[in-house]
Picture 1 (cartoon, helix red, strand yellow):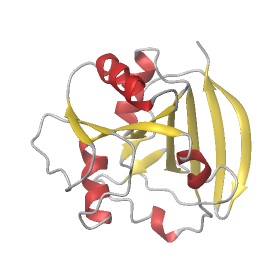
Picture 2 (cartoon, rainbow, N blue to C red):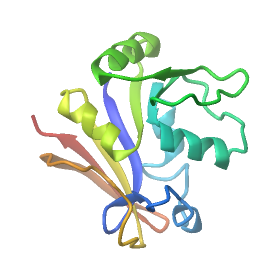
Picture 3 (cartoon, rainbow, N blue to C red):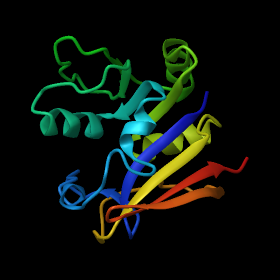
Length: 174
């Protein structure tokens, strides 16, 4: 079992615009079934965690529907809606406790830190993040939510092209 941060980034290292938009991402060509694509990745995921901004974007983008079958933790201090039938758990505090709950719920499958970068950084700070998968889009944003707002030592273990994206998979060096 491993904990992954799987995300897309602009070439200048931002995962969202200052107003939390991902519209720039949706204009680029990527094959979800292609190399380092979403479909193969998510098949091995048993539980997810995301921040409030990511969760709210997913709800807006999916128009209130919920596309994940895995249990999902949302880290927030706010009261957020939960779609009917979704296994969404609102959480706050230390990511170690959430990671332990996710591990138990995943039943041996991998864990996915969906975003944002600060949340992935908290998992890395706690020694709980194993891999970073980044799909780099051919766009620069100039400002926004950073990919990973801290210093980490990573080892590149795989790189491919998928449509318009340069995809890299990195291990955290401990």
